[in-house]
Image (cartoon, rainbow, N blue to C red):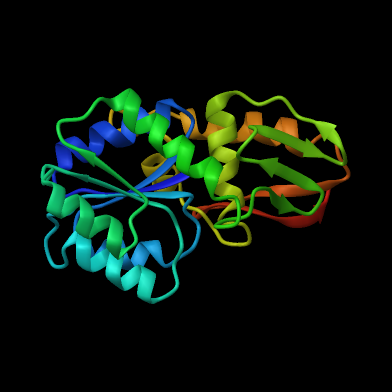
Length: 227
């Protein structure tokens, strides 16, 4: 599941990001309303967690803009503004849920998952790259009908690559979106996981989907013959 967090408190945003990643979700974080509106229009997110008191553009303005542009991605308002009037305003503008700060993290996770299950038409339930199929809802990966067993981190990494298939994804981008804030950038963990993923999704099959672009990053695409 892909989640967009729009929160100007960087410490809180990092806490939420890390917690959701540990639950197997991929997370992008922005710290102002303009960035939130721009990122949300990409259509890749299952759920948006949106602070109301954001710089540049308020959360209410972001909701109004997205719904006016036809973006239907479910939105959870996460804010210290817990008055009834604010809740009514957010919901009437098009938000799907409202959670007041301080909040219980387990409750936030449950609400995100509930909205993700309720909105299968917002983003594709299954992602495909050639004969490689990933089901983000059920956590399953198959290729040519054969189920591929992945660890939670491998699954998150593959989902991140599949949502950006055909484009070169840098190591920095992978670290920021798949690993947490405590990741040691001097280690070769990314390279190790990419090799593990390649061994599972590529080497048993005739076509190579995952390529290393020397000096630039990685690309998942359909498909190159095995050498």
